Amino acid sequence: MAKPLILVTNDDGITAPGIKALVNVAKLFGEVFVVAPDKPQSGKGHGITISDPIRLRKVEVFDGVESYECSGTPVDCVKLGKTVLLKDRKIDFCLSGINHGTNSSINIIYSGTMSAAMEAHLEGIPSIGFSLLDYSFDADFSTAERYIAELLTQIFHKKKINDNFLLNVNIPALPYDRIKGFKVCRQADARWIEEYIEATDPKGLKYYWLTGSFNHDDTTEDTDNYALEQGYISIVPSQYDLTDYNKIPKFKFLEE
Amino acid sequence: MAKPLILVTNDDGITAPGIKALVNVAKLFGEVFVVAPDKPQSGKGHGITISDPIRLRKVEVFDGVESYECSGTPVDCVKLGKTVLLKDRKIDFCLSGINHGTNSSINIIYSGTMSAAMEAHLEGIPSIGFSLLDYSFDADFSTAERYIAELLTQIFHKKKINDNFLLNVNIPALPYDRIKGFKVCRQADARWIEEYIEATDPKGLKYYWLTGSFNHDDTTEDTDNYALEQGYISIVPSQYDLTDYNKIPKFKFLEE
Image (cartoon, rainbow over all chains, first blue to last red):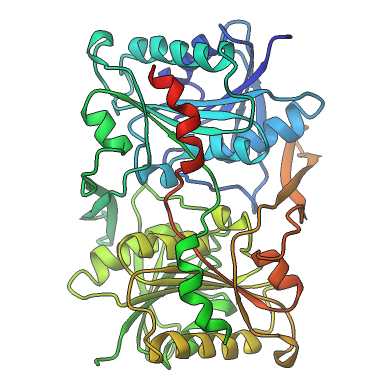
């Protein structure tokens, strides 16, 4: 089998340490091609740029890896990678991250990292988004690198997976030997309790900064949050059909 | 029962004709409170503003309706509405739109309109996002208004629905008597075929504009796209759990 072509992206920007770690691992498994944002794009969700032009610039960031920085969102990076930069080639795999901070539970819908992976997935490309539960820019990604290599080894070499899929992988910020392994789970039904810091600018006008705390209100044991609390790496197979099938019959009265 | 408090938002901006039409209808059913973007925010998906301050400004746009324009995304509007502006009150309902253009099928994940409604839903507020299949700014919303009034009448007055829910409602751009009614369906599994228009700026640097065509590759008859093609208003009950439950057992080998 020829070396697989692996598209790597993220949402923290092309200079973030997390994507460097992910490129290091991805190089062990195939030919790596990077298209990543030219600035931090955390929390951009599945946003796309439709009313502005988008820029692509070839950069030398990773040794021996063709790389482009993009002025758009993480989803724009995947679209431009597929449609413009790699339009004559088949992308075999997409890896996104490693995100600085968690994307477990409801965070998946706000996450640029996961939305980029989702975009590749819906274009038929098997994709994985990785996040490390450490928000700091200088987080230690070495343990995450080792576990990602183990995960990709299983997926690439055991060849148990041939179809299209999307995985949301979150890694606890623990030393290598304190991580208990991988746990395949569902997205916890938990959410943020928002707060806004209100302040006043020099002109006397108010402004607001989003902050908040995460509410672990889903205490069942088959969730990503539970696995992470227990010291496991959580793996949530994910998809983009938002239909609430259980509610379809309940709303049929509207057809009367 | 006291008049319900209805939060109205959109993604086309507070001056778009679509939100004016929705406010007109919402006023028939409760006390309306508007928090909407101060500029077009189409395609922002579930993006939130985390690295910049957000502004809120009280404006007089709709007769007798307390209204704020917000510098953030549609999701920011809902968060600030709930957490700051209406923090001492219970929001009974959230209505988002009327969007200028379709949000059927995969468009839901890119849509600021639907993401705002989704955000309210995940905070426990029953929510509906409305879209009219006409992208023009001067689209005729009068037919949409009539059908939205009919839909809300059924939901509010028949009281068949008490729990939390999210509906993605798309309305064909047809005259009133050519619309066949409401159809409750699932999200079609269709996607965009992207293209980028490549051009060169005055400095000789390339830039890209996203364009594309919609691929109706899901031809089954229980979908929103099919209902719309048949002249129905499509209603897709939606939710935010992205877990791909069918794939959980397939990836259990990773736990070995």
